[in-house]
Image (cartoon, one colour):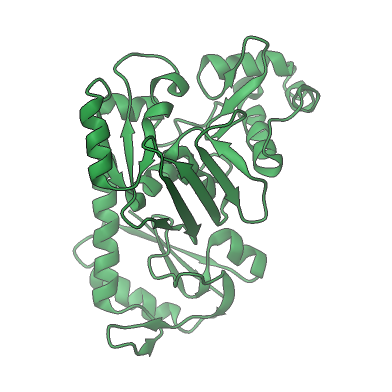
Length: 321
């Protein structure tokens, strides 16, 4: 579990937050706490700081008020009696940490072949540095993020030239290792988490271009990768739509009963073929269970939206770090 305390310089309430964390984590010495100071509004927006201090639990602010915006202001929390205080209550913090632990456990329980295909764990979706692969991968991802489309080959040639290679050579390597997908003409059709072709999952980052995601988990990973808020609109396999608004890393789904089915076929192959079509939002757990029962050839797990967001963050959160 990753805990990050964000604060403005010399915030008097940080010490109180530290005391609370020390008390609650007394029997969990393995949990590390990172402190980061945020002085400018633009930093607050990137980091997801909703006032000082802000506690991020695995990248999510569990105490963010719906509709609140990032800021460098002083922050107060409401306890169970509605009283303002400089830190969350002990009860609220214990509940937030327990929820994060459950989400991690659910992600860890994915069928092994599903986790492998998705690239769960560490830096497995990040291309290697050698031969310019990571530089080109990041250039492709940044183009999708800013324009909703892959970059022109000429743009990538400039990046690849720094490594004595051509864009075609590097893109071929990335395709072979399944960091992105090319069509028969060598054009980029996908760069996980983005799709150059229409899919049921559209992501609109705050201040950015609307873009398609390869699957529900990829869509939830986009805000974490870009460090922004976003709205995700997705059509379920049954037809109804699900809308997820991510603010400060915290997802809110409409309908609130929405879940994500995370599965993959038994065959090998790139993620785009093996699992992306099987990672979808459903309006309810019952709907997802009915779909899974009708498709026994696609083993998987049903995650709530918070758990699926955690999975998206684990896969994609560090790609542009």
